Image 1 (cartoon, helix red, strand yellow):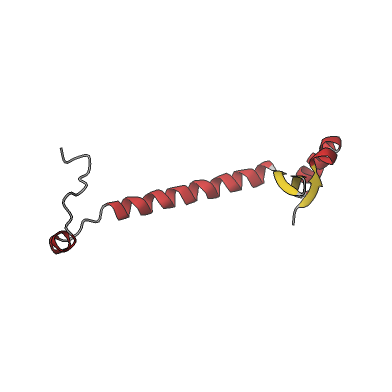
Image 2 (spheres, rainbow, N blue to C red):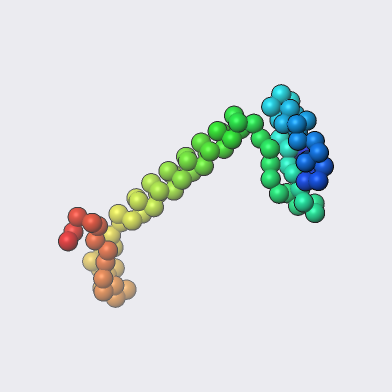
Length: 92
C-alpha cells in the first residue's frame, strides 16, 4: 500500500520522501484536495511498469494484426452486401 501525502507537505519533506522510496521500498502518492496527483516510485518499479506497458502494447498490436488479416467468405459478402474490402499494401 502506498503512503499518501498532500502536495504542500510533500514539498517540505521531499528529501525524506525520496529516502522512503529508495531505501524503504515504499511508494508515495502525492495528493491535491484528497485526489491522487503523482506517485513517487523507485527507478526499478518504473522500469517494471514500462516493461509491462510495452508488453501490453505489443500484445495489442499483434492481436489487431491477426484480426486484420481475416477476410470474409464470398457468401458473407453477398449476404451482408459488402461492396468493398481492404487489401493490404502489397495489393496495388
